[in-house]
Length: 383
Image 1 (cartoon, rainbow, N blue to C red):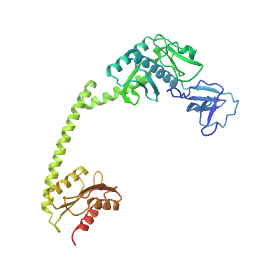
Image 2 (image 1 turned 60 degrees about the vertical axis):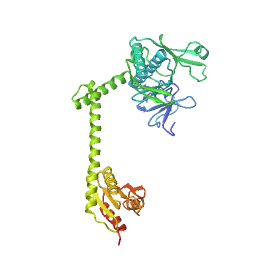
Image 3 (image 1 turned 30 degrees about the vertical axis):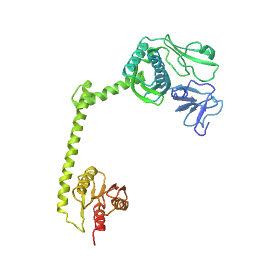
Image 4 (image 1 turned 120 degrees about the vertical axis):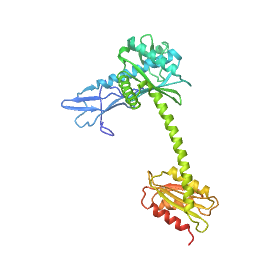
């Protein structure tokens, strides 16, 4: 197959296509001196298994080939998929919580449980039982039965597809379910299961987990992250939550103090600006551009100016960190701050809006802001 993507179809294959929640195998296909990387495998509508490769120009129908599967990737997928069977069975045995879907990604797996609630104790108990089954190294066998026979065997989940023959995965004396995926031969080969997180989803609760070498790699990454975080606090890793809560409380307290200080500074600066600004045509027009204040502060300043004086008009701007403008006037003044600001920001290549008494906006850079404020102040000043 050359279009839309180069691919090979073989008369038989050991490559597993994406199916049943499990992702595809990768590997290589070789013919003579030509070796192609298999980067995806899919099961297309007519039942053929398609092996996507970088090129098929050196291959013709009837060419004898040899396929080689990426053993590490296949082993990982076997650990994840068999781990999912054990975990799903644990939730059934302990709490009768059925799995309604399974998803395998490159770095994590998840199952969706049909339940309105899921507690921490249920999660930990299911994880504990799953790992006990793994440690017991139970046999995992494969057998084929008719659909009628399967209906009498008490499967954990009977697939909806109408097939004459079903492939069953049997974890000795623990779980029996229909599945076409790749699996370990004994539960000990799963090595371990680590439940990572849970979240409420539309059909119940999603449980994220990792198994086998993924669990080891994830635990190592978690420990490294915790150790680095603990080092920042000069604390033991088990004390990180307490230290984080303490730091967050301190940050909230400092933020409140800063907000209060900003309000006080804005109030005093507004009084000073009004005192030094003479009336012109019945208005006190304050024009200021700040390089060391943010948008939050100039909004506070505008509010104080218009609150402290019955005839204040403020054209304020900040150049840092993001160039922004705030136009405001005392209630009852005749101008339209929203329209004036929109005109000004448009001329500066920005955007903004507001109402008759208060408006704000942003511009891409600080060039021309001071001149624009002076121009709009001159526009409303009596000639």
